[in-house]
Length: 324
Image (cartoon, rainbow, N blue to C red; front, side, top):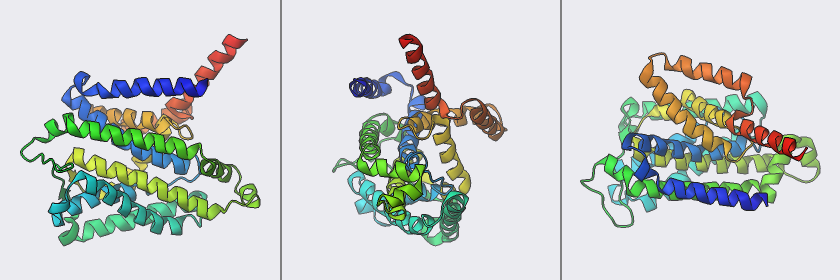
């Protein structure tokens, strides 16, 4: 019954998302699109943190990998600059980097894992920053509007592109990402990751190869993050090395904590809320980082399980009270 109700809710939400361009202003729609790209990142990050128990402060590296794959193809291979090529390419390169970095990181746990992930991300940041002739250095690289299945959007303004074709393309990929991640966490593989998170010694005793499963989770997480980075680049129109900086990685952590990790829908809620929170904080005060920090402290003190976790706890209490 619960599963059937969940699918009904998902279906209604999908219909609402289809109608979003008709309801939201262009400004709010673009913000919502930013939120959807970060929601995809959150789904991947949550697999690592919420379901595997590994906290990474370097996931900006894989976000930058996806975004820079798009930018580099636009700069050096303009004939290949089509969405049907860009998305698989971003997934491939983010997977390669995630496998390389993950192979080094999963040998460690807890704070050692987190710091090593951060350090490797900063290595990528330094490369993107220093290789000016290749990556544009601190100036970054412009990301033009791509073609899609032979249809060229040349001459179309970016807001018009984002309000039409691209929104529905993004929505399809977001929906596919959500369904794939739902399948992963509910599969035997997902249950094995949760057993590693809960007690890695017992998991190893029952035959789970802990390091290998962590590497798989790391690679999948990196791919989702790279996909989010690629989709984000089309909205932003410009990529810079700061995407791989530890500060940006910290924002990704905050999004997942805000929504609630360990809950599939939590990072989606957190990503969208954070997108609006950051923008409005920046528009109202130059001390916007103080606002973000203050809300994080309140989050830890008042809602340690995040917004989604608090909602789940409240729903369970109401059910218990009703049954009683």
